[in-house]
Image (tube, rainbow, N blue to C red):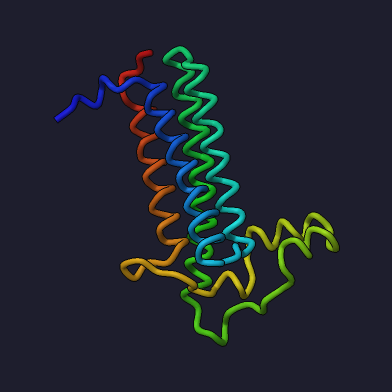
Length: 169
């Protein structure tokens, strides 16, 4: 078994970046293009947080900071992933509601962005609406936001490990 302590900080962050990129490739090419599933506002928000932690991880890998600053980058990556996990949990909650309690479907995100104030767009992106409660695809009985939550939790776990391990370059 490999010694995890010897993994270099920059390599772990490159792996986190690659993980975020693979999440976006799967979301765009498989779900959106191949299956034709258009993302709801909560899905778009989860994508934004995945891109966010990926960008921070790439910057951290390229910067390859001193050990005490590595913990700062890992904290920001973990916080971004935690925000994405929170949005995933919100969508899973909406998906668990009985049909009569699901919020009404609102306009599409592009329509909201064109005709509504930014505050309304943000509310839709973080609270969701009726289309966010639809379960359009499952694997092993778990929907897309469930798998996205698993991905965010894995990223958070890696970051926590990086925060508390003996830092080295």
